[in-house]
Length: 528
Image (cartoon, rainbow, N blue to C red; front, side, top):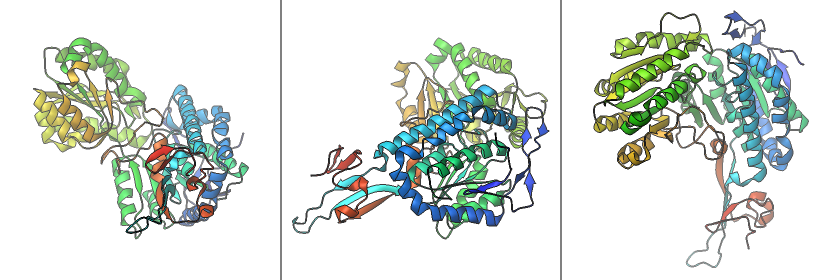
């Protein structure tokens, strides 16, 4: 078992040019972990991205030619590291073993899903409109279009998922699958976990003879490290998972460049849950228990945590709210991921009373890095007057909006900002009476849920994990599922090209046997 080096991984070599180091912190026992990690210098960032830019031309061809072989070592090596990985990840995050083991499975499953996607090949959206040189009054050109990789991609790892949204997470997997080299900025909360995973990727790249620079790992605690990565001229796109403040600052940088680049950020959400009257009347206790479990899952440190509960006042409302408060009170405290998250949660929940809410479950003085559930409520008209109440509180907090009638429920839905998810808890026969609510939420969210909680994001072809701003910077795309690959590709059309010089995906014979849109029909058949 290799020892951690704490060094940056630049292509195939380890690098520790800088003098500034940092250490990880164990949130469970409040102790600093002894390993030192080197913050990347400007020259190391430059080398990583120049290597990535150089590797791009070779990698984008090789990953196509070696589709069946290239991805096999990735998930296998991660799975073999299971014990070492989960020990280090638990140490750095305070997350329970079961959660980390589940993340290892999710991460390897995600890699296998992308392996299957690129092996099959149809993701490139090959489209062919056959030419007609005899068309009058003008000849029709032969046009063939497909998605191609975009170039070196920078990925910012998330704090709350040390594996699934980190070094080998969805951003990295989708960028590599599209044919792009990747430079990952490791999250400083779990640098050791990041190094272990990065070694597995590095070895897989070497084993399959991919070019040096296909992957690099950069350490850094400061905003400056991220700034250098985004502004580097070799960077062609960025994937980010984190806070709104951090994501928006980097997004603005990406757009301030001489050559602006796509910046795909998932920045959090309050994920409103609208609970209609018949659901409260018929199964209020059950809904309250489910909601409490979702609010506190992972100590509320999920971007899909339901942070807003919208209900109409009726004869069963108090019973429902008391049941929700009781369920939250019995769950108790949990370990938060790091000092920053814990501090912000404590500050925001302590000061929320000043915004006019009534606390139903309060956070008494808590031990360091422990988060306890907090439940507050407020009238709809007061909520609508105060934009600060629309902001995410990351942790086991939820705000209940009490509406006096369906019109107020509709007003709340229409005044929300963009969200990752929205949920409606109702009886089926209630939906026909609430079509306007469904329509309003459809405009605000990326995933609209019926009779379910938003926590839990399935990795599959149909998943949409992204929403209108400020939930993400581009709600047309997802960061989870196979469609995430489209963030890191762009369309190129080939006009009147000789058959032998076309990419295989666009040749008339369809040698890859992929699904293509030919003359307005989807088919795997060769073009006649």
